[in-house]
Amino acid sequence: GFLLPQTFMEVGSDQQLDFLREWQYKLWSAGYLGVHWPEQYGGRGMHPAFQSVIDRELRRHSTPITFNVIGLGWAGPLILDIGTEEDKAQYIKGILSGEDVWCQGFSEPDHGSDLGTTQTRAVRDVDDYVVNGSKIWTTMGNYAKYMILLARTNPDAERKYDGLSFFLSPMESDGIETRPIQKITGEYGFTETFFTDARIPASCLIGGEGRGWKVAMQTLQYERGAAAGSAGGLMAVRVNIADMIDSVRDLQRDGQPLLQDAVVRDQLVQLMMEEKALGLGDRRLAINELNTDYPGSLPLSSKLRLSEYQRRMRLYGLELQGGAGGLYVGDEQAIAG
Image (cartoon, rainbow, N blue to C red; front, side, top):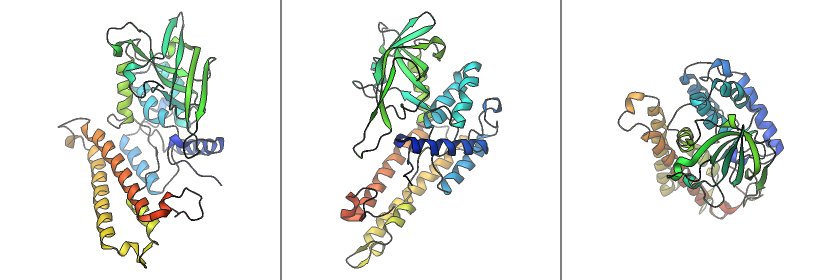
């Protein structure tokens, strides 16, 4: 057996990738992925509400993740919104089936996530762009067939944001190299990507030369949930408060079950209330009339609040485990959960 990744950022072996690719293909073939994407490109052309119901059931049954997140959640919606018919015909079906893995080329080693200072260069040469530079934290870059790439096409632009362009770049080109990055846990998932006189077709440009900043911001709206369009599926395994309680149910403190401690019970109830509120916020998102005051603010704030809640809830779970909370998965003394 082997551990399945909890997020797409943890796919570090061919064994994991093969399993998840097969799972996504089965999910899509059964009609449970890309339900509201157009039929002519591999979807089913139905109302987005159907995908929401499917996703809730997938989460309820704790199914594996749909690993091709950059394609399903970011590149796919972008292509459907602003791509040409040729783009849609070329890319969308492969995203849904899992055949074509996508990665993201935004962050750079010397500039982090400050996209406005992107230094990777793309110079037009007849029907190609010649790309030089590097990107970092490229999730699944070593497995990807395509990359959403932000590069500087005009270094002399008056505003740094105006000299950027956005590409749907093939990864299987001469001059493109990926190197895996090992995490502190010993796992992989990230890579660094190097471009050395790599030639990509000019047809890979999307949104127009010099308009890369606008396209990148639109893409990040999909990522942060502020714009709809994701093909669905489970992007990550979400541990909830019930899971955490189950993991500590058999623990004792001073000879008594931990869950009988009044302080622990009060703190767990507080977390349960917060989780319920987050769930109600998700339901509110589906009702347009309840989101007219500050459009886009609720999904953005929900993402932040969920991330903070998950962080605090997991830390509390480790705290309840005491010294065993410092042990790693697979250790004989580790508490399963």
